[in-house]
Length: 117
Image 1 (cartoon, rainbow, N blue to C red):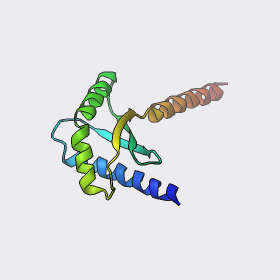
Image 2: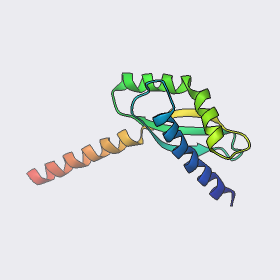
Image 3: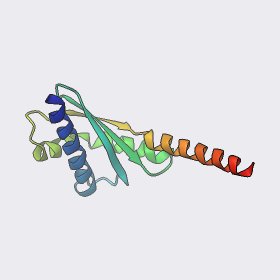
Image 4: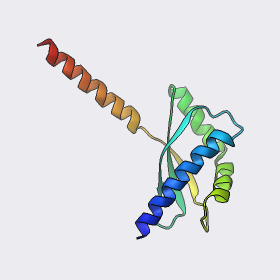
């Protein structure tokens, strides 16, 4: 039963953070997508996974800006999500999209080699 509650909170946090980043953050963060949220069982920490379009410099700049506005995001989240205590936000770059693209590229190359034979 607790897992369902945590999953609902994770999804709600993901949606609300996306809205906050899109509309309320004054810093020009760029095109950031929140791809997932993992809450600890005691709801004290939330690991926020995000992705960014751009090169390595853009990823680093976005990471710095997200850590800079972490307090604002947490405060805004507290007014939008009904929780006793708003979790500490930990941002982590989501590499699964890049990994998926790499695998897709490898599969395409293998198919092309098979078609040549």
